[in-house]
Length: 432
Image (cartoon, rainbow, N blue to C red):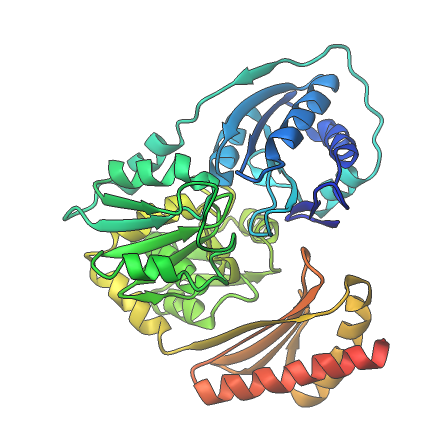
């Protein structure tokens, strides 16, 4: 089981069980001051069983449950603003046999302090049993008001990936004036994996040859990947396009995760904006957004743009609408052209979680000898020059160590990536 502010996740029936669900939901109930909680789930086979357990656990603790049914994560976040709390039954981009819980308080994901309360047994005192009500959401209409209508009836292909976005994304895009084609809508016979950031998206690429743009979602609809002119764009391009829209809306203060493209930071600063960097992870970006009263931001590695005005989460569905509304503008091409000058490598090394800390300690010593500027707010990041960096950090959700690198020189980013990957493997051998 993996436990972090990104959620509690595991292989259902193996290291994540209904007993775990009861424990974590009971503990989470102590954080729900409103005594009201929205619940929703993605399309995983185990989701309905877990959702029933979540609802029963919350009601036993005196919490009234507001059930959205099968619905994307961004919709549940949006509705949790109304009700005060939320739980989403999802394991996001993990394989189908996984499942998990995302916890929401006051419209945002829980922070480290709140996670500790969810993990440790809490004393529960209740005077009544809560009720359960099925609810609908105003998400689509609210998003349409913010996005506005598009010009020219753009042709958009949406790759649902068998996920929960099917209930919302196509409707939203049609309402803003798009000609929408859907692929991989059903939960069976899906042609790709659950994580569009790593899948080749060959079917979407094929289907968009005569279309204006393509979008691919993960199972719970918070991640978004763009396909344009027959090419899959990097996850950072999703964030870059969202940021460009926020700049058009007049916003100037941004928070980007430490692993997001330096090209996005430069794009913002070239247009008079300010950038601060957070730890990787949606909740960490949100925390810094709130602390600094910033207006937008996100996480490049997950294709996650965040607009706090609308939602305290990565919102792939809203972002797809924003990007479509920019298709006929100069800004869209400006972002793509600017970001094409930078080259990224996002890699991973399979390493058991129990030795991650020891490896990073060894690695830091090696990297401090090799690079002049080291940042350690989240993992180990070396700033090589104004356009080049490399970051090594442990995963919060998998038994891997992630290596990310970027440069405006393809040769340089390849060399640095291989050098640091060798240092990671060398450090692993030393602690085994």
